[in-house]
Amino acid sequence: MGLLNVLDVSGSALAAQSVRLNTISSNLANAESVSATPQTAYRAKQPVFSALVRDAMSGLASVRVDGVAESAAPPRQEYAPEHPLADGDGYIYYGNVNTVEEMANMISASRAYQNNVEVMNTSKQLLLQTLNLGR
Amino acid sequence: MAIGLDNVLDPHARAMLVHNRRAGVLAANLANADTPGFKARDIDFRAVLGAVEHGSTLRATRANHFAAGIAGDGAIQYRVPRQPSLDGNTVETQSEQVAFTENAIRYQTSLRFMDGAVKSILLALRGE
Image (tube, rainbow over all chains, first blue to last red; front, side):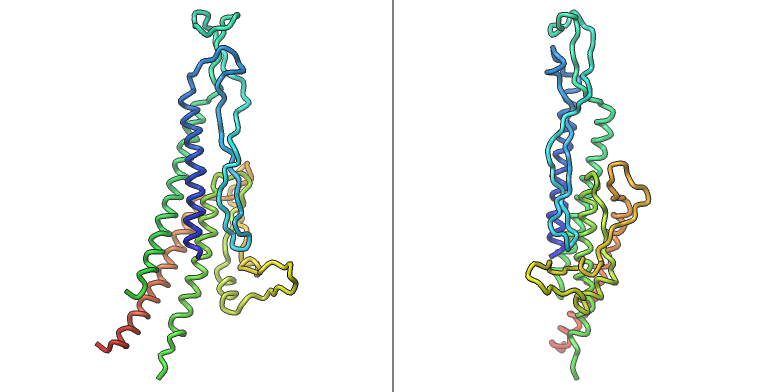
């Protein structure tokens, strides 16, 4: 039944977008986290989405989160010799989070989430109306 | 006199079947709006309705042939994007939303016609 599969497909998208929102919130929360070495500095995380084809003949494809990739951008270095975590040269290291990018990403994720909720609502209404056929 | 129950109900039932399938394809497009490299697809309603009415033109003649679904008749096709994105994704959320809404309304229309037919038959049976 197509409309029941719609619930599955949209549900997988909701799960994927909420993983994305989770990584965004952890990136934003750690935007000001400080570390003593560039190796231990926080790295921005991004989920990697791929399409999981459920049935090639019917065109159904749900979303799968393949994993969470870490940004390879260099951490932000700041000269702060009075900081307790400063290294021998007086530097501390912030995570490589770009807050502006993360905010834009968050808006995109929440819009995508809303879209899929809307699809689920419409399908649910259609299914319920079908159940009431002839009543 | 025969009521011709099938004649009244069948066309709408078939149309609903196709709308049902199309809803799945469009939902998959919307679900993968952020998946890199995903290509949006859609169903050619007329072709699928024809295949549902007349049966598929493809037959499985060997054991390892795929069962020909709606894709077997070339009815499921890739969308031509108006503005392809850099990551290879061709889903345009706004047009997919329009198509999904339109499909839902058409489904409801068929449903309403069927509902009316069922109700009039019930009315005739009761003879109230």
